[in-house]
Amino acid sequence: MSNNLFHTQALSKYGDKRGSLVVAEFGIGCPFPIHRVYWLFGTVAGVSRGFHAHVKTRQLAVCVSGACSLLMDDGHNRKTVRLDSPEKALLIEPMVWHEMHDFTPDSVLLVMADAPYEESDYIRDYDRFVQLMGKK
Ligand code: TYD
Image (cartoon, rainbow, N blue to C red; front, top):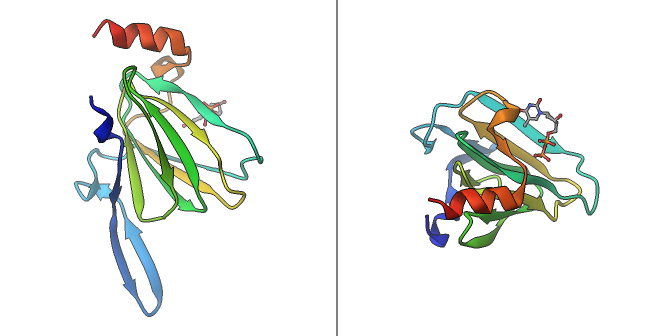
């Protein structure tokens, strides 16, 4: 995987005089059928989260309010992506180490996943992650 895969994509936005509506649907902005959705909010100032990779789970992240940064690392390349618009989605593929930093106080980070929550899908040790990626 190359560094340039860590970029946001624009979701479909519908706006009229009433306001805006943004959609992520399987095949329309989201490349997988959505099984699970969770969101992070009320994140305490200065706190960072994540610090893991998933073995199989695919995720799509949208900061629907405020902003936060995702550090993305495939074991060879690292890039920090700022999510600062409800129209921007970031795909987090399996075996990508990710960390969430610099949440604004009003941030709501919505994450869509293609699989149920399973702790066995998490790699939480960075050295082990790098070792696994080095063997690819
Ligand atoms: P955690 O993995 O620490 O979150 P982050 O990666 O953002 O730092 O998850 C916090 C808690 O929430 C932990 O006890 C597991 C639980 N959890 C679920 O039960 N289901 C889920 O879908 C997720 C993402 C977390």
